[in-house]
Image (cartoon, rainbow, N blue to C red):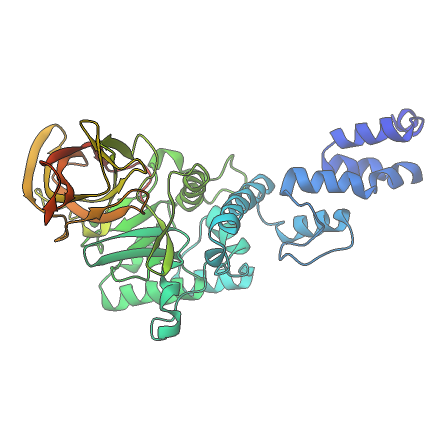
Amino acid sequence: MEKELDGLGYLPLRIILSKLSPSDIIKVSCANKRLRGSASDDSLWAQICYQELQLSTPQDDHGNPLPCFMLAYQLWREAFSMYPWPLVKRVKRCWDKLKKWFNNNFPEAEATLRRGASESDIEQLQTLLKVKLPLPTRLLYRFHDGQELPDKMNPKTASISWLGIIGGYSFYQNSVNVYLLPLHQVIAKTRYVIRYLGFSSRSKCIIVASSFASSRKLFFLNCTNGQLFVGTRKPLTDNEMIPCVPNTLIHSVHDLYGEEQQDAMLLWLEEHGRRLENGIIKVRKEGDDRSINLFPEVPPLCVTTVTNGVQVRASAVFVPEFSDLLDEAEKFMFAYSIRMSLLPEGCVINGMTFGSCQLNRRHWIIRADEEVVSSVDDEAVIGKFPLLHPGEGEFVYQSCSPLPSPSGSVEGHFTFVPGRLADPRGGPFKVQVARFPLEMPDYVF
């Protein structure tokens, strides 16, 4: 075999080496001087680094530049030698996808990601909290130690409270924006709920994500089974927390030699990246602040209807932190977002075009499963009578509704008048809102 390879020209030998695994390339390089030289060709290692790690320039796991790709690959393997290599590549792909989206769409949030934690940082957390982190979560923290958190006491950093990479929503006076916590905050917040809120340390749960807006929302990672839970209105017992990922998808969370190790944290962040990449959720601006808004933007979770030139988009999110699993009537809370606008052609009724129209009334039918649980017929929306003009931005408002079941829907209509309520240019007309779902999702954010 050695003689056959030694007799090949550069190009055939290069092609053969490119088909081998990195470990086999290293073995071949030990055969003789010529094979060692071919196996050291940096273009070969550039291809390997790109295929396995998506590296386009030689750098170590902290982003520091290196002189060649061969050294880069060697240092990456050494830095993560205690982890299964397929899992290292998967976690890096997860972070790469998230950071690419943030770089293109929300760079100010990407800038809050911290440098990766060290193994000693992780060991310190495990010692202090008496837990053993699942392998995928350990690796997630090795790449990025959560986010820099806002200083709530400093008014100059108030807007930073909207830079959580998980995002959130608002309705009435409630606002949620979820950050990934750095390890020192995981320790501090977990100790706090154990010491002051009666949370059991025997649960082996740690707080890994939290809202830093007006409403509290906490995510707990069970370090024993790898499931991620979100707290409800009463989060301090297992019965009052909701799993964020289907249990059937979690396996081999502590097994170094198992196949396809995946815990809820990794699955959750991968799903978050998919939703961002596919435009299911987007960055939305409110006032001077931008944030990731968890109200869906695409069908079938978001519906769009146009009546007489008035466009209405509607979607909903499950709100676990206001749900109460022990309350039969209000077990599941949902918030919904209504976005209305007047299309550029204006308000068109019976062939006549009007330059504005104004909302007067709303009518909602809310169902749990297929049973009507609420019917609303009243003036205005959140106390406002929005006046729409062609081509202006959407008027957006949020509201909420509790349900006794995890599945339901909302549909209805708004009553508008052409012109203004104070100066109507015709009779009232109905603007339909198609039925949109209230569904507790498989992945809870």
